[in-house]
Structures are given as C-alpha cells and as structure tokens.
Image 1 (cartoon, rainbow, N blue to C red):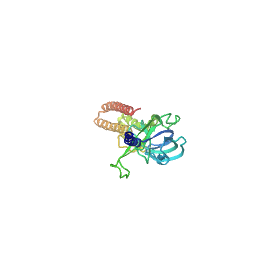
Image 2 (image 1 turned 90 degrees about the vertical axis):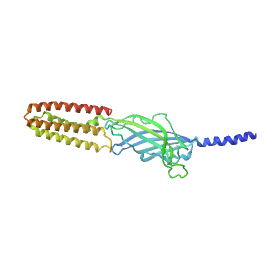
Image 3 (image 1 turned 60 degrees about the vertical axis):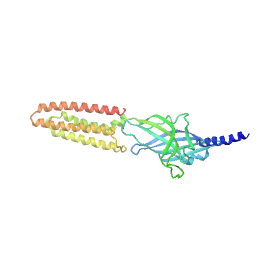
Image 4 (image 1 turned 45 degrees about the horizontal axis):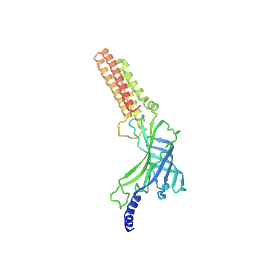
Length: 315
C-alpha cells in the first residue's frame, strides 16, 4: 500500500503537468457572404462573413477578445452564444475593412490573395489553439466580384510569432506566440476589357508615330510634329494609369509597355532625323527605302515584344 501511494505521488504531478501544458482547442470556420468595395489604390476591401467557434473554456470570451490583425475596422452586427451542452458555441456576423498588400507587377493580368485571420488577444498558444472546421463550403457559391474571378479558398491554422513580450517582465526573452486561424481567398482579374480600355490610347499614339514612315519626305516637319505629339500622348496615358494604382518600387507591366512604346517612338524620331539627312544629301530614293525598311523593323519589334511581355504576365 505504501508503495502504491509513493507511485501515485510521483506519477500524478507528472500527468497533471502534461494536462496543464496541453492547450484547449477552438474549432473554427467561416462562411464569406460578400466581398465588395475593393479599393485597389488604397489596398483595402470589405468582407462580410459568418464566424463560428466551439470551445470549452468560457474565459476565452471571443465576443470581447476576438482580434482580426489585418483589419482596418471590425463591426460585429450579430452574435449568439449557446452553452447548453457544456461546450460554448459562438457564432457572429462580421463586417471587416481589410488592409492587404497588392501585387501589381502583372497588372492588369494580376492575381491577388485576400487574407483574413483571427487571434485571441488575451490567450497565447500555450492556452489556446485553433483547429479548422472544414465541413461544408467556406463562401457563398453565388458570391461574385465585379471584374474578378475566385480561384480557391484555403483554410489553415498556425502560430503567429511576436518578437515582443508586450510588457510581460516574467518572460526570459521578448517573444510570444499566438494561435491563428487563417483564410486565403485567391482571385484573378477579368483583364482583357480593362487592358484595352487602359492601353488603347497608348497603341493609337504609337500607330500615329508609325505612320510617319509613310509620309512623304516633303512633309518632314509634319513627321516630327506627329512623332513628338505621340510621345507626349504616351507619357500622359501612363500618368493616368499610374494615378489608379498603388505606389510600387518595382518595374511593372504598365511600366514595361509604356517604356517600350516610348523607345519605339523615339526610334521613329531618330529615323526621321536620319531621313532628313539623306534628303539634304540629295539621296531621296535611298531615304524612301530606309523609311520602308525601318518601319517594318520597328513594327515587328514592337509587336513581338508586346506579345512577349503580355503573355509572360499570364494572359
């Protein structure tokens, strides 16, 4: 009997410590009902969704402790709590204005990832972990985004690390970890109509400059005037497009196509200047042959490089 008592006194604290170290599980899922007000320039969008959680520890109190790290604003329009079976079942309706990073390298043929995540602001990963409730759909099949198509929705859980102790002096080092429930909605743009709407002016400007190769050498001043006018038209078109995009430090498809167009128009101006030199030397026939050959080369290069960069962007 004494041996059993000693064994109990040794083993019980061990199992108690293990039980204490196991965090409580919160089964979580969402159902997205709408996404709207996508503000591409300000990098934000609004999402309406239902969020529900099932857990045992009432101290978690997600009605007060729910945190949406990426949200600019969070509005809870409805919530209900059921604890009749000894387990808390919480469901709430949220409207969140989310801030996210946009990738504009391939704009307007871009894909974007809309992220939504939640944490508990009071309990770290030692006390609470999320588990995804993957039964059923995660968004309304009738959900439509004007100008966008939905590719997929990924649900996952993980640990968010913070390199700070949030003022807790009992920690050996400033490091805390919180369990996180994460959703990624991957969308791509219906881009072809938008592409022509934004770049048609640029292409028309290039064609105007290109037509200079077919204007007789007697109207050399008109050729210079059309080319320079087309140059400024392309620059103006780029400023208009840039005004609707977020700031970027990378060279995007918009920059590439406009840069290519400006270089080709500059080439037209250089060719016109050389044609003028030939005419002054009395080589009228040679200048005409040079115009024809130069026009073909410039047009071929412009079309090929446009096709390459657009296809590379993922059309």
